[in-house]
Length: 80
Image (cartoon, rainbow, N blue to C red):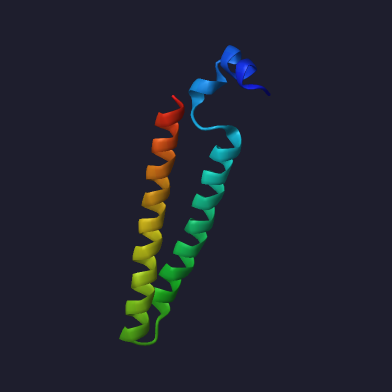
């Protein structure tokens, strides 16, 4: 679909292009899977050292998810 046909259809005001929106969704899903595994590792860790490493992974994934949300928000604002 050309840019002019997107503007005429009103789709340009709905946020990032569908392919970018799909990539954000896919990235968020992948980070969610990593988060779930990190949380499992944290709960099942045999000792404090492994628990601390898993907790750091959980924290890092949560930071990455937050960064992804911020990038998405800014890309939607830029395309509005």
